[in-house]
Length: 224
Image 1 (spheres, one colour):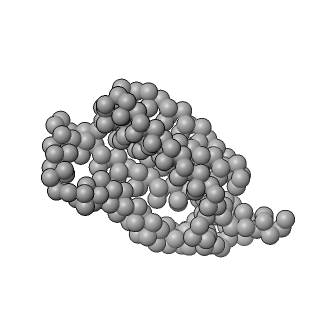
Image 2 (tube, helix red, strand yellow):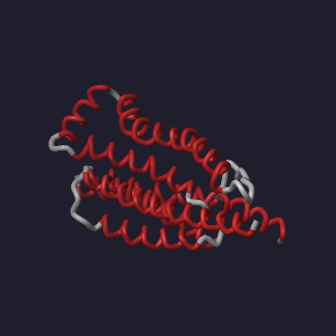
Image 3 (cartoon, one colour):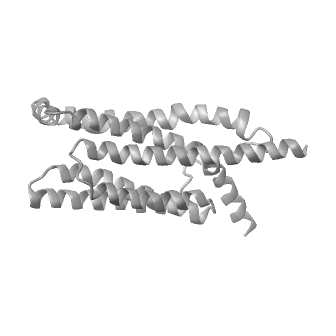
């Protein structure tokens, strides 16, 4: 039991200070702005689709997955992670000590559940697009599925790691995701608004986490 508590407290370091929230918010916002440029500008979506088809499948994969999702995710994971660890060592955890978490912070079962949610909603979007003959449901399925997956993961972290702000993020995220889904946004604005909502929500969560840890460190300094 003591070992399990120690493992949980070590994993909490990765979430309690809010640094991971900033990393996630970065690539979410980049993806949203990319979608706005490609799909949201007047006439740009039709022009892009026609041009992409003429270039072949490799071009489509690069422009729809690697550029908007893959590269920002790598920058977030490696570049911002190095900056974040520096901030943690030099400021946030300088008194109590910094513990480097495992590469897999969340259990694989939780990640698998999140991927299953994303995939299930995406498939639902494809089926709805086929039935209604509107391709926008495919793109909507990707972003709605991602939003619901975030709700699931944040809710799990909030409950299992006893970090209440993540439970709040999950609840607010679920309400916001459903409201945006039911709103009449066009094919370009929908992913942008969804990304902006989740990006700002995670930034707010990150700021709150940093402030809480900074307050704890100040109390430690005063006690010394």
